[in-house]
Image (cartoon, rainbow, N blue to C red; front, side, top):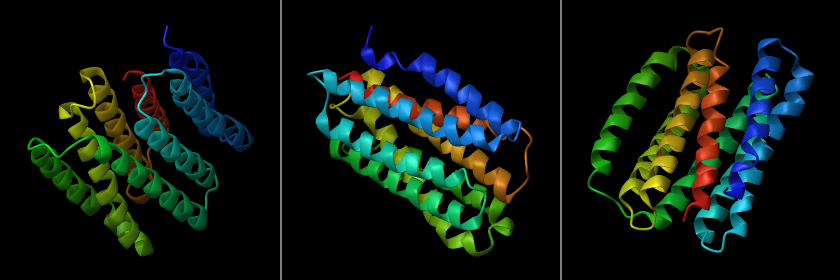
Length: 219
């Protein structure tokens, strides 16, 4: 079995405990289980270094993105505007790193025009939905929506890149898409309408990050 799959059972347990702790408002448990969940994704990625066929550009790029994501996860555990802004900035950097990583290995595809059009429309509609609750964060959120949409678009391009096999392309695209959905749920809950079960965003988030990490082991 691929060694990168070994952390998955532990990750499933820690993500469940993180969601449970947040639903029960046990913040001290969140401080433990949430960073540990992200660290397990990082471990799954780092196990790709054992594979002589892994692509160093991809593995290092995703590793740097995950480190920024870990910082973002820690910032978002603290419920105040400054921490949220810091988390937003760190995740923005993670997305930029992912964009650069995908772009190094994926030439632009004509199919990407369709993906960009869909993502632009979705981003515009979503911004209109939440803008009344954004306050001073309108500018940063517009930038964030643009960057995460570009990240998904560039992930889509890996489906047509000669540097990735079909399995990797699907893992990367769906990983990026799940990451995108997790952020949309988080933003909708914070800026539009609170939702009792918004913590399902963590399931999408960790599944997405894990797929991006596991793709490093299938070159």
